[in-house]
Length: 263
Image (cartoon, rainbow, N blue to C red; front, side, top):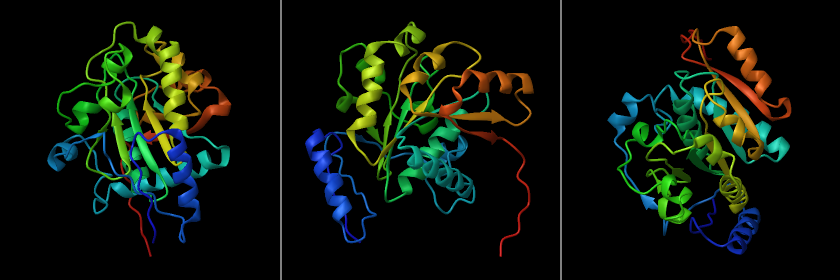
């Protein structure tokens, strides 16, 4: 099996050359990334387990559900040529951030893809806390112009996964997400690497207009619904707020697991 190594912030020309090299590989199915600029952080497995982050460990039975979700998501995105995915929910508490993290990890396990997870819940950012990331510069500094993107990216010790955390709530989040700076950022993240899937953890749909402000910039949307948490009217209202051509699917989260027989 061949491999192609490239730095995480290579110029577009190098990225294009990398894509050609991957396509020319004998097996054509292995993307290897070397991180020369991105900060690498080793995560605490116990902390991840306490926050229901399971997809980093392929031996964990819970990771299989996210592998199934990953395969369905990737098939649909590849059909449309989509590379950016928003994860949101009708209201708080559905577990959208946990789903987004586990899905990103599962995608990163795919040898054909790299994954980036961006914390766009600018009112209540949780990615760093859920992952147990140490404090540092983050998307906050990119948005205020005091840092560049390469300065703030984090690799959590899992090959082919990069995180863009938000350290603190952002003033005027709706206006920020609607801004030209964010539109340019989304476009840059989408176009930088052909093999990368960029997942944006968005705020809930029904609490504010934050998610609606940025949805036009993102290819498709995954709606996470907590089992027994959202009334049907809230789910229906959320589905009306998402353009139908962008709706990738609905995930029922926190449901009791049904016994299954495999043979």
